[in-house]
Image (cartoon, rainbow, N blue to C red; front, side, top):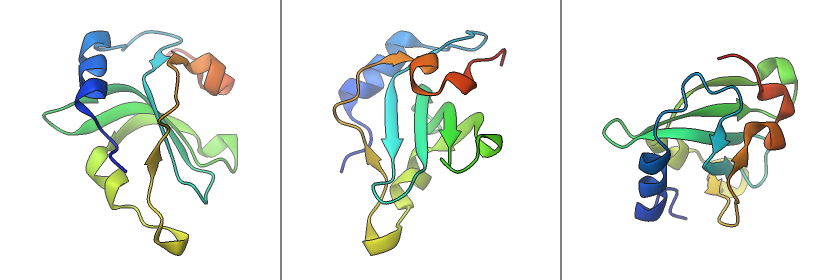
Length: 107
């Protein structure tokens, strides 16, 4: 699966930095099909191939956090059955409060 598309890259550029936004818009969602990890991307730097967003392991909220994550690292993940991380192709942009209410905070 293609994790990043030109259309998605354009959308990230259009939205730009959301630093200081209390309830940022999630542009893309990534997940592992046989795990509970989810990556909600709010920003993307095409030069560094890095996202910024909220990451949850789905186990305990205390492990969830805001931070950077790499497109290349997402693409390299192989889990059970050799499955990799996927992009939710049916994702509709929404504020983080709709995806992970506990993620809303002053960042």
